[in-house]
Image 1 (tube, rainbow, N blue to C red):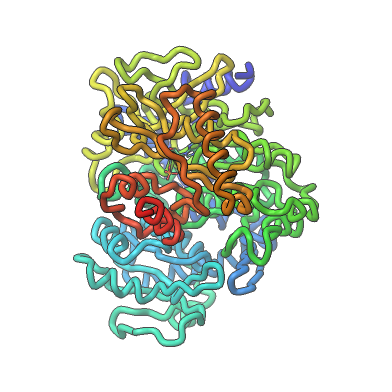
Image 2: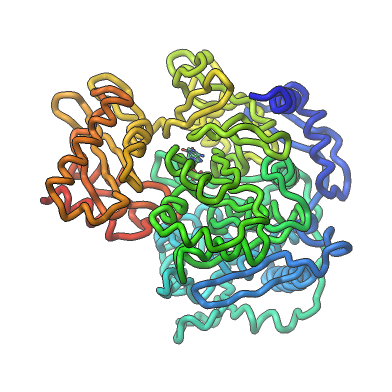
Length: 632
Ligand code: AMP
């Protein structure tokens, strides 16, 4: 780790009050806080006590003087062929109208609003309108099925729900309204109103006259209305975002207001190296934390232009994202390793035919970035590509390069260093002592968690403590549930979730480590390794491999050779103990729409069990293919 990064980090951990008071200047406070940190009830941290602020004011109002004409949002849908810019002034107008409608529907400070929306500007207006009036939004990703939606409705008991007639994906219309109706049949605590944005994608909608509100009709009477900002105490909740854990019931990650705004503003400058007036393109979805933080709040708080993109990375052709970079002079691009692996399979001409001159950085997160993909994309775009590691719970990066502080050398496969504010340790599982360099341990954070991290589980403080802070009896630490190592130079490597561990004849092996080894074999696009029951050794790894070169799939002799090669590769990288019992070639891996591999489902199928909840699955065909493998 460089001296400068080290000093910056050390200061944040040694003198958090001083460090964060300085960062807090990045946002507007209506009235100043009187204490930076209150940590009198560990592990609960309160930041910027008694300071009053508002996320919507910081994201819009405060930019009106200098940037009213600048685009706040550029909306691009390759699904509906829509492209339009929304200036800060227009955003102000739309958000005020939406806020007026919510108030009319009796929504006020502390009330919950559930947003179940495709990637359309109204989704962003809805989020900001909630923030303006102090309501707590909970955005649920558009792919969740009715039962999952009902579960979330019951957990946060929203007063109002906001949705649209439909979303679109790869040219297919995905009806939202019918699904919301089904969810509300199942829910115990359905909201009084459902506000619906009609996109004209569904001809006939079932309409509940008492409950359903046509957004465009309803806002006509609020045209030009201005709604005053609700000034919130810094620790009042701003949003809830549900995330899955090891149990069946999703956890409502609760985020505060002031700490959230400060953390995001600071990250834009120190991590993303971005400036007001520039453009960021984050290819996630507003239903995920990356969308909350880096499509909506952080770019707008910073006074940037944010690209809101509805569509696939490959339509109309795999050059689409690079064409957006060229056309809108994108300075910072944020995507996921999965998306890059999809693009890796395409002809490089789709990158080469666009000018990427404006682009300063590409950031990738959400899942492990394998070395070969990292190398490939770095060479392809000839720009710094940063792997960074974070979680829904943290809301902003935990391990990351910080080019805004200092540009540091990339180590492929590593998300680099602990971000300022995180007192991060790699701890031995046996006794919570600190692991030596290059020794595998649990990636843990000594509390207090920095500003912007989850403040609790919605409605369940006990679950917050039990889930995240109870790994060790002897030490109060936040567990990321990830294995990792820190090398001799201070670079960190994530080795996979602690809950995906395989135990082969008493030896614990991360599936991620095996995947990394296999990935290094030339002709491989993607790989998933899971542990399956084995009568002799307890568990054995098996591997599902997507090859880059599909032509080989018909050649069984070649395939057998390739399988042997892969096994040898594992032998060589990790030892025979990690060698997969079997390698299966498939055409795709089962993943959620956010790109997370459904390991547990693969594992269940391999062990002849029920694959469990598949509602978040991107493509059912992937699971069907795996079922076929085992029936063959
Ligand atoms: P989520 O909260 O859904 O974003 O999932 C967070 C988890 O994704 C982490 O605990 C990691 O297991 C994984 N993850 C996120 N970013 C990275 C990364 N850069 N490298 C490796 N794993 C990652």
